[in-house]
Structures are given as C-alpha cells and as structure tokens.
Image: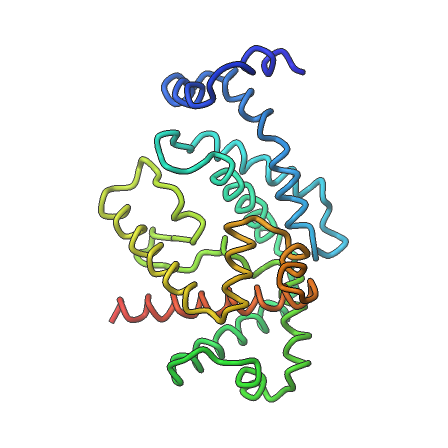
Length: 265
C-alpha cells in the first residue's frame, strides 16, 4: 500500500471530498486517483470489446485516466450521486472523445450509421410509432439479415453511444445524456433548468423504446452490465445485444433531434 493510501485509508471519504473541494490539496487528489484507478481499466475493458485490433487496450486506459482526473476535479460531493457512477461517465467520455479525435472509424461506416439513423427518425415521425426491422430494411432496399449485418459493423466501431452529443441548442450549448448527471458550477440557473428538462425528455424517450431495446439501455448504462452479461439475461447472443443497443441509440438520437427541430420552429 502506498504512503498516501495508508495515510488516508481510515478517513471518511465524504470529508476528503469536502477537503479537496475547499483546499485543492494535491495529496488528497492523488489518494482519490489511486483509489479509483481500477475503474479506468474496468471501463476501458468494456469499451475494448468489439474494437478493431489496431486500438490498444493500454491506449484506452491512458485516455480514460484523463477522464478520471477530470471527474475528481469536477465532482460535487454534495450532490445525490456516487462518485463511482460519475467517474465512469467521465472516463468513458474521455475515451470516446480521444477515439473520435484520431478519426479511426471508416467513413463508409459513419455514412451508413447516419443513413440508418435518419431512416429510423423519418419513418417513426411519419408513421407515429416505433418501426420494426422489416420497415427499416424495406426503406433501405435490403433484407433484414443484411440490415443486422450492417448494425453489427456499426456497433463494433463503438461510435454509437449515450456519450455522444445529442442536443445542440445555442452555439455554446452541447448536452449529452451522461452529462446531465453533472451540474458544473459555471452554468447559470437557466442552463441548469434546461439540462434537467432535456434529461427528462431523454428518460421519457427511453420509456418509448421496444421492450428489449429498453432493457439493453437500462442494463448497460444503469446497471453497468457488459453486453455479454446482458445477452445471458435476455437469452440472446452478444451480437444481437450489440444490434439492439445500436438501434436503441439511433431511435433516441432521432427523437431528440426532432425535439430540437420542434423547439427551433
């Protein structure tokens, strides 16, 4: 056990957080970073599933470490949320931010993901109900098995995630589902109210998903199960869970985009 960890092991964590918020004590920060370092490897391991071979696990851990430090800096111990939950959000977000910045995803996959997302949004807006795989495949002019193959390729890139920015209001207003868990001190009250309203819309949108897709979202993001574990719960293959996850996120993004468009009219 390190000297710092030994020094603070018997302290109440809430008091350490309050001390760090008040003083910025680097030793306390280092203790918290060391204590929660295993979270970075855990999240990196989840993200690594389905990644191409050229994406190294150690690189994901490195990216995630920045997210952990960011979480320590921004965490508010007085809010009704556990640091572990908050930190996993920031770690996952930091990993995806870095992956996006190095632009490793083939353009053809990006284009196909955008096309399917637009089709789902268009059909559900036109028909007024949740569309099935057959509807999406017919619109694309392909078979359902071919659609599932495409969804598998998209999900394998991990570009579809609740960490993505979904709602763009004003030029400087960017909100993702995971970011609605935090309330940065530099936001004004109106911005905080708006984020809470958006969070409510997202939660309501999740409730409208088909049953299996809704379960995948809840188990993956709220219960923190892996795709493999969710497959065991729902008694389907991990590949099928990936497809369900991809469709669920596409539906949700489409719903929020329509909400944005309605607000701007």
